Length: 334
Image 1 (tube, rainbow, N blue to C red):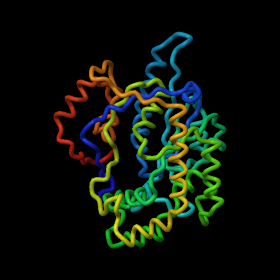
Image 2 (cartoon, one colour; image 1 turned 90 degrees about the vertical axis):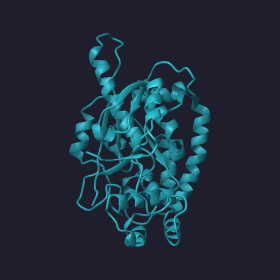
Image 3 (cartoon, helix red, strand yellow; image 1 turned 30 degrees about the vertical axis):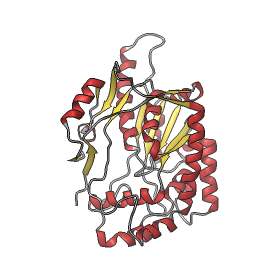
């Protein structure tokens, strides 16, 4: 088993900056809980918040004035590792990284703003008494499920001969709908009621939910909420050893996953429409100029291994990209 095998892009992408409405910018002063659905592109956001939290803490410690910056407290609730079980795998009744009451109390001891993330369902804001909203990314359901299968194959959790059984009897159905609907929907059948609960959650309790295709915009948006106007990043947790193309899996796997994720398909279509409305109302993307000045908070390709980030100019990022061939980098994640 290659339990810690990871791949990342060797190149670094400078993300477009975003201007956001005052209404949305205020969210950075409250708590945000990121419902990180596996294989939707959320690892970059989690890595970025680790860097922002550390840098903001340093800035707050060094400033003495009344208007000193307020550090954002970042905490990731990790999935408990079990031998031979993928951290991406949800079965019926499992809660992923949803914390115990003791673990939750530790986070509650810190003041807002807090950024909390994990592979877990909604429910944390209410149980923890946090003041804020959820965010999340969703992906086309068959693509997401195949990506999860590829990831689990890469790390040795499943063999190719077992994929159809894994997809039909091991992986939970409609994971995205269930996670957004909340912890009480992680067991039993996924029904129309579950779907309605997820849509209601999005309307009432989420700042936004975006499709995976908008990951770069969402990453820049979250960074802006905490004062980072320029972000550059490699792509993390890219699956380098694939059984299938996510966009065109073979039959009958495609049929199995389509049938088992019908509510996720409806949810995804709903999110695409709602995200476009949100973006039109609150976000303006700004492409970097040819003579871009200043430095980018940069998440380099080896960050998952070294836990370190950098501040680089556009020139330095371009120099880095000119030295690599664009292939994926393979390493063992610590």
